[in-house]
Amino acid sequence: MYELLNAIETPADLKKLPIEKLPQVCDELRHFIIESLSNNPGHFGASLGVVELTVALHYVFNTPYDKLIWDVGHQAYGHKILTGRRKRFVTNRKHGGLSGFPNIFESEYDAFGVGHSSTSISAALGMAIASHLNGETDRNIVAVIGDGSLTGGMAYEALNNMASANPDMLVILNDNNMAIDNVTGGMSQYLLDISTSKTYNKFRTRLSDALAKGAHKRNIFTRFTNTIKNLVTRHTNMFEGLNIRYFGPADGHNVIHLVRILQDIKKIKGPKMLHIITVKGKGFKAAEENQTAWHAVGGRFDIATGRALDEPETTPHPPKFQDVFGNTILELARKNDKILGITPAMPSGCSLNIMMKEMPNRTFDVGIAEQHAVTFSAGLAISGYIPFCNIYSSFAQRAFDQIIHDVALQKLNVVFCFDRAGIVGADGATHHGIFDVSMLRPIPNLVISSPMNEIELRNLMFTAQLPDMGPFVIRYPRGRGSVVDWQQPMEEVAVGRGRKISEGNDVAVLTLGPLGVRAQNVARKLKDEGIGVEHYDMRFAKPLDTAILDDVMKRYDYIVTIEDGSIKGGFGAAIVEYANEKGYKGEINVLGIPDRFIEHGTVAELHQECGLDEEGIRKALIKKKG
Image 1 (tube, helix red, strand yellow):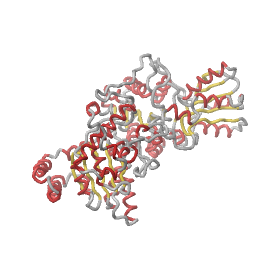
Image 2: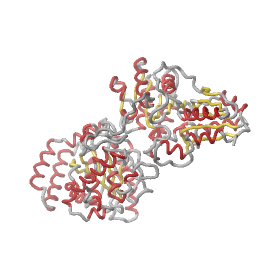
Image 3: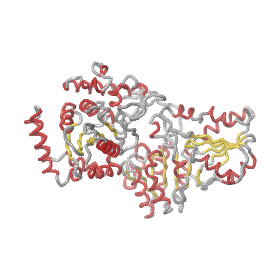
Image 4: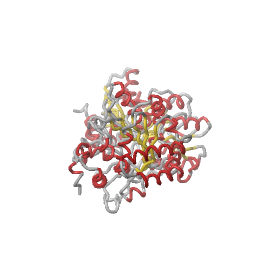
């Protein structure tokens, strides 16, 4: 089945093949990715869409000496397989195995660590300038950007700098009109206009038929089509206007043609862009027809039909926090016409698509542009609206300045819903939402909350949209909560007030967020062993419930805090600071994410690694007894 692929351990082996064999390599590589992910789920559609590009790049360029930077990185599975990791690909995204993204510590072929979007051009530009300073005139620098990453502002900052720096580098724009959901905004339409220019494509097709054979004819063809293209797009092509040589659009699924184009472009000095058209999920019918659902697969599936193989749960189970958010914001928006929904390119991931379907004029997908999403929300808030700005916690880091300057400083009622807070699992270090509390806690005017369960999420969302609330953060994890009967009437929560979960006499535990459910389970078991745990769901990291803290510090000389976030500057650190101010003489044991980056694995595996599983919590709670 993998006649050619099994013989490729590095790109040097790929280069030994005649160009006519590359379509077979692409077929085998695509099938290998499909077969692998049918048993070991991960990002799916993006890697299938760049199979031909991946093979062509490693065939033409001298990697790892030539630098290849993949934007976002979830389309780099083929790259990993061709660069010595095929036999280990079965461990992809597993604890202790390969990362789902390029990682500089994993392979010399991974030129830059990625995971967030729109960074490739900036990194490549830095490498290109460094190569120039080092006198490395033979080193090629290539950035592959796509999957919606050109909607991110950082990419334009890099293009602007690239225009003035005039480096020897190539940007490949993988244009599939998709991020996770369909790409929105003017850039998507602009690229469509370029790729469908009737005049340019008519000339190009006729010339292609006449001149596409032979190296000499190809050179004539390239020069002539560039001339025609410049006449057609001279006043409309943004890239040419920035003095970036523009080539394309080209068929991103014709590997032989891509190789020949790249061989020609490789000889051209200066900043260059190759625009290719691809289909996300190419080669797998179900993924081509439903690109959003097949962006990443969540379970095993049948290759022939695309049918899920994992048995669906038949017993009632708690909903995902994301779906509770989506249904609750719609419920609130029906009653409050000032509520709006904003997301940076994650409507299906965060479930804002539920409101989007019923209220398209009150929901906004702004593209992969977290900074813009926050300041856009600030503009809405200062105009009297209540925007619920839903951003994945890890991505919210990118809008730190806007949260401070444009929202908190002006005390605007923007409701930040930080999805995927805490440990997220197989996506690993780039995606864990563990820094938000530490990052935001020093900012004045912010309320920072985290619900223990779905009912509390609804109550906090209801509270956040009440008059004069100001900037309000609600952080919650990926996946299912703990309450099956969650659709209960919403109630206002007193800001800065926690709630008592259980009585006890031996130890006090203060929790923030859904790990409180696990602490509650441990407390129940310890009660049967004669150990009394007094448990408080604190709800808020800022402001703290000082009434609870004052009472607990009077009665207990041992306190445990639990959070699914960094212990450096987080919720537990806030309690320690308060205890020090009050002269507390007892011991506070802070449980949370240690001061290091946490790699990938299942959430259960990573919680165990951090001492946040039931056994870790139990050991912390009985410390005084042991």
